[in-house]
Length: 107
Image (cartoon, rainbow, N blue to C red):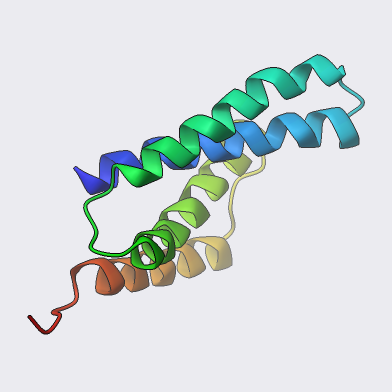
């Protein structure tokens, strides 16, 4: 279930951050900030639902998921397909995220 929460959190965070980007960089209305701030609050809530014994470990794992989600945003929303280096980097990050989340820990 953790990966579902990570994925939902990534969408919420990217959407929230994009609202600020749209306002400041794309000249959109400041009204974009209201749903963006709600989206960022949802992101924070979703990240607390992850099954992890420590917040820092959950955040570190989430970093890998966030990178993949950002590249999907690049492709789907911004219509710019990731290149092979983007994909290789994302794969390395997901492997690292898995090691952090599921690596054996002393009891």
